[in-house]
Amino acid sequence: MSTIQTSAHIPEDLKASLDRQARATGTTRAHLVEEALRHHLQALAELPPDAIVPKRIVLTRESAERVRDLVERPPRATAVMKRLFDDR
Image 1 (cartoon, rainbow, N blue to C red):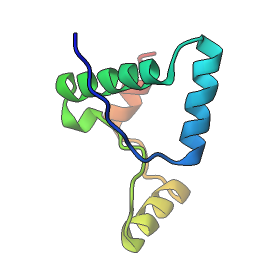
Image 2: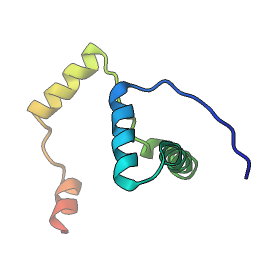
Image 3: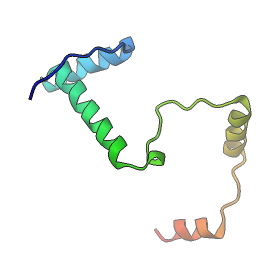
Image 4: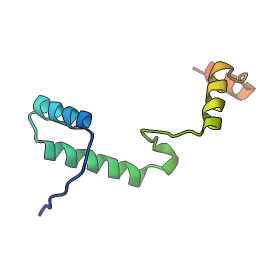
């Protein structure tokens, strides 16, 4: 299979992690990047869009306050939720 070279700008901490993983596994950075990209693209192709959790979620002030309120004062469990957790 023929290959091409591509480049990407990545944060320094990600490069450091890539280098550590390459050393630990005795493989090349190119191989690790190729495998990671293949896994990611396969997941995007096979999983429903709502199953992919983004690494970063940006909230508006209002939505962040709503999340904080839900964490601090969670709603009462519904009957369905109670049955779900009782079936363990």
